[in-house]
Length: 310
Image (tube, rainbow, N blue to C red; front, side, top):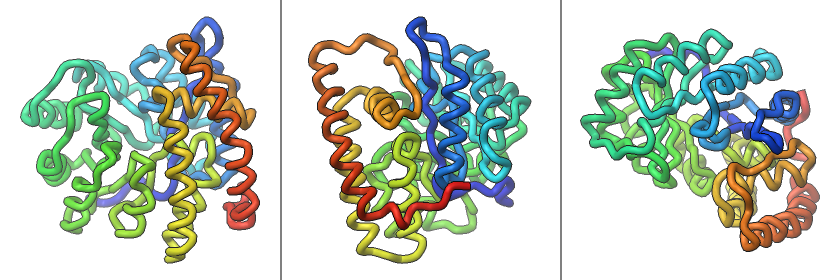
């Protein structure tokens, strides 16, 4: 299949800031997308796990796409998550995202209930028959039923709208499977920052859709660019910095660690979906204390290599 639109490079999975009553802070959201666009990001992904799609209403998700499309420059595609508990709602979300300006869809298997490979395949075939933009299969086994490599291959080969995958499993088997068959011409996106450096080193991906890129875009773009120019030494060092960051971020439930760092950097103020227990508050405070020297170390070494603002 032809790659239209062209997707690749570093795509930031964007947080959706909310106030004390749980209402989206749309001005903050637009400013965050603008900040990311000015710091070298190649695209944005809204309404995914980082954006807490299961928490958002249908209307909030439509507005998120529209605000992102207005805030991002034309060069940055907007990928819209359309995850839900049912096929009909996924199709509706996709249609509204297309009307709001999304260039592609990110669709996980339906959430909450466990589904077999046959169920998942039937779901994607039905969704693909009803949408007008390319679909990335969202492999997200920490939260929904897994998508196995053979299922993904069949769907990409047989359904013109299914264009590739975002694999957030933390494994590389699916990306290896797609890379081994260039005739599929599939988009291959890493969705788990833990395996990004390895996937780049091995030529297994066209890009990354990254939550870390939402709060530290400079790091993820530096890693991607080091890989593209074949600088293995820089890739190794940056990969170690990323691994340290992910370990700290993942000490808190997703996406709270990212929300904490967004606040530390003054990007936006996000309130978590549930109150922080005293132990979680201690972890959040420790994350804030860790970040300042980590950031100084990164910026001191790599600020000159950061992509220019555009």
